[in-house]
Image (cartoon, rainbow, N blue to C red; front, side, top):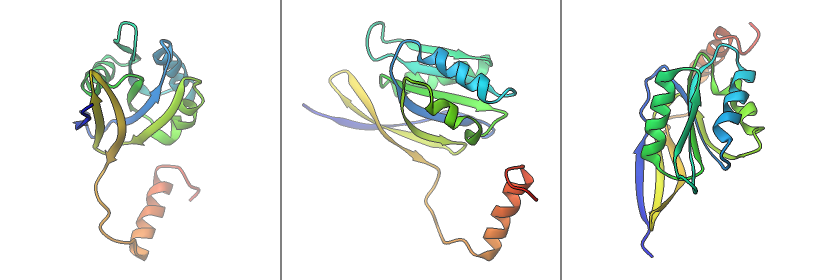
Length: 163
């Protein structure tokens, strides 16, 4: 058996967040839809879920057609069964990650980020699997006091810490 490795770059704009994960059941897209709507009332999103058997279709839901169509396009490029991708705006991963984790079909979240992401895929005999992700860029240094002040001010500016 020959296993080939590949990478798929997720297509998204810089103002989008994404969550990539693994789940398994035909109702996954609908359950993820409900989780997102309950977690963040202003969120705009598209969900795509790759079936691993049956019709082997990309199943999708969402409340924003552009994000849903882009999620479908990315899911189809990834191809691996039981993989889901959520592209969203008007929220951060921190706002919805716990809701996603409580969906009974979800077994893993590979990443939750606004960064550019590449998905590492293993392929073997018309089957494929997500091995992991490349999320963002390499670290270049250790933060100094100025960097700490910038970080702390930023999380206060966006409302995640008290001023």
